[in-house]
Length: 367
Image (cartoon, rainbow, N blue to C red; front, side):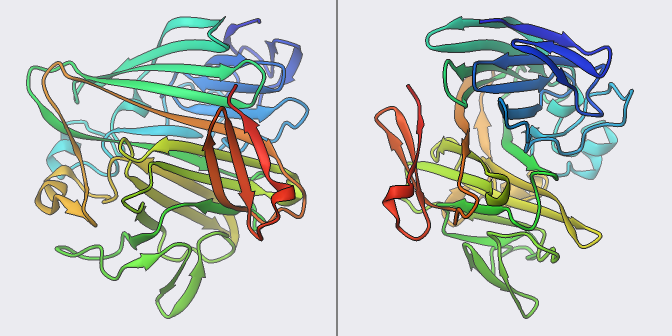
């Protein structure tokens, strides 16, 4: 296998297997590339986001949201980024002291700890960041499977400060055109939730249920984003007996699906965000994490829980906490009806289609 840490100096960059065209906005940036014979993953050091995940021969990249203008090399949130050490806005005082929206992880440059190399059935790389104000660090290990479009990400969070503290982490996977259009279907195994427009002390009222809800007198189906924005952000939890959460987004006419699987004990919340511009879908975020309330910590601490799920985590001084997730790509039929359920185990991910036709199950190998 060939690995490269890429510093793009033009519109072309070298990868295993030849030359590829760099998408506008990321040329010139420091990038980490992992690839096998079927898929490619690119991570930006300026903020740590996964900015490209695509199949060889099918160059549609779902994670191209919020690319910078050409020549902008500053850290930023884009693609699949992490909200760490918080989700949403800081308090007024924290903001005045320099804490940015969604935390510092997307505002710092990440370091490479281990360049990509082949081992243990995949191409593995390690990177890290330190939050200068939050005093938390993250050690990330990425593993792209040898022969499948499957990426496993393990992230070790450590409190490098001298005092314990509360924190949150939300994986903010964000899709944009051309993958995102009116044809995209979102699916998941969540159940009940609430919109972020409720008021304290009961922001979770009224309760909504995936995928449809009435909002301002209109019925919205959150599986599909069309020309209506609806409530903007909706947060959901899983039933008590659900071990693994999953979420997928697929574009049947373009033949591509991207999905995630994670342990609900590590990430008990799934939040959906969407944006419409000029009557067209512009962005959609599938955000799984440790919180479902988009507020500063002072409010989270006062509220404590919603639907029996905590709104934050606590990490003691010098303590480490490890979380992980798996993301994957799959080709789908152009008349695909979306994912009704996912089977996860015995080395495979099985995608069961809406409609119950088992002959159209899609199997993604986990070796």
